[in-house]
Amino acid sequence: MKTTPPYWWEHAPRENTPEITPPAAVDIAIVGAGFSGLSAALTLARAGRSVVLFEAGQLGEGASSRNGGMVGSSFHKLGIAGLQAQYGVEKTNEIIRESIGFVGFIDDFLKAENIDADFKRSGRFRGALSPDHFAKMVSEFQIFHESCGVQGSIVPSGDLAAETGSKRFHGGVVYDMDGGLHPAKFHNGLIAKLRAIGVTIIANCPVTSIDRTNASFTLHTPLGTTKADRVALCTNAYTGPQFRHQHRRVLPLRSAIIATDPIAPDLMARLMPKGRVCGDSRRIVAYYTAPHPMVRASCLVAVPLA
Image (cartoon, rainbow, N blue to C red; front, top):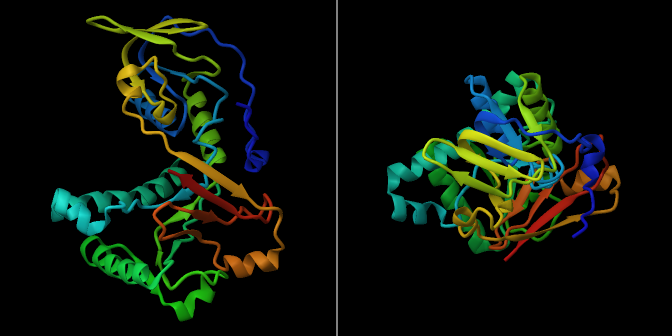
């Protein structure tokens, strides 16, 4: 299926990579050169391991650069009460604190690596689509704040104009620690770091099968074979049937993205006055991101489709 290149690739274009013959042997082979694979490769290579990455398509053409760029904590759909019922209070708090800490990790990582990904901790506004939703959001935010140190603020309906030009919401909550970045720039930055330390990245080279012996693995590709002591399968949603054990554990979730025509700056300032990343309380999540000012004045809306 032919896809349309996202407009944000204009400032972080995908590259045409030359054909590379896979190495005969490495310590670790990584399948998939998205965020997961690139991050794993960087950690392993800096630990002294020889690493090769195989990417089935063009570098960065998948979900790692085709997303809204929101960086934030993940509050499970079960809600804190549901999580506590399933995992207990202490384990639930640990999960939430780790989720919160992820944003700080990204902030520190980008600064330490000097990667310019337009990262900004602008905060996240989550709007309530009904009074009941607002009451539940306020209650959960207070629990998150008291038990896990989540920082933010409650936005009653009378104060919504400071956060959004929409009239649909009945209040909301702002999470201070969240933010956004340019996903394609982040991806490009990781690739540059890996190449600087000599890691081989082979694009347009799908791994068609993996044979395992007692001591190693042999990866088969259209460009040749590679023997590796260990394999990291980082294909996520792109895990194919050749990896049957992992493929059967992937749950497909379709997503639709709407990008508007260019919007006048004064209208954009009314719609999203603080430039936050935004979401709402519906079960089928919709989220909204303001554009980077150097790209174009438009709004991105992503809606996962069940």
